[in-house]
Image 1: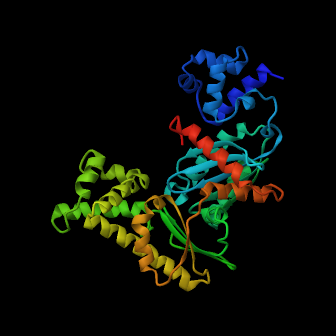
Image 2: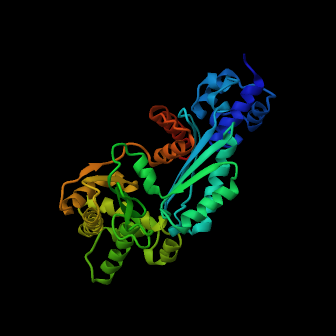
Image 3: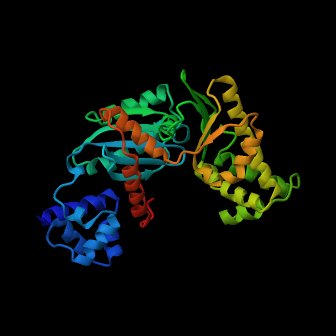
Length: 394
């Protein structure tokens, strides 16, 4: 039976779930803000065209908007968190795979932002999702680069326990999330290639890292390393002690001024500002620029040497798993890396997003043995991302 109150509650719930304002909804549907406000207060009901429009914006069916009952109303929820040096993703979900909310916030790697900032970003994301769990949150798994073990992990764990005493929580490094989203790779070498880089070996004895001390220390396979080397190459070319390169014009054009006049800004906004220059290096490499090709070659040969060392010092075997944002240009660097390795690895690139691994770990820890349904979760996760991308929030 149709209930105007249920419809009002559902409209507000899904708007908040997407992090949208009433004005954004009104603009999307070409109605007034006052109309949206009345819908949410139960003072008026949207006409059919607007109701269908709302369902489309929210990524749900019309029946779901009109329903007085949904699984999310009674099922406990869980939160998975995947944090790194560039961004942190939060997903609220149920054991049935229903994705109730998603937030994308700034970095939480303490090597990048400091431990206090790590905690404040975690609180911001969790606080935004908690109101969307109609029957409460049962458990949270936080996987963050830069805190695989030790005092920093303990600090974050205590912070979450003190801040959310009614919610169970678990903290680990992001390596666990990578492993959890990669079926069939319980043992092997894992390499993250993103804003920073990290190599770790997983064996029956546990996990051992090789590098990964943060973007300032990472020296191979990271966007920050490539961006920094690009600026150095431009400087040397201008001084006449290095080869001419397309990067000179492209970097200055991207920044709207000579890069040296922006150097304080670049390092002040690190690591994202420096690593944002990495795509220019790959583009110049595609244009057969020798300097850009040399930067990429040196960077990924260094990463290959770390992978080789990890294999030599552990019994992780020949499975090699990659994750991270630079996978979108793997056709440029993967042949370089593989040619450097003294063996032929079994390369795996996970088809699942890393946040799925964090969510899987949350349910495994606090869901009483439940298994996260991959199909439904991914379908709802992608639909939510598409809905958020309409408003530039993906």
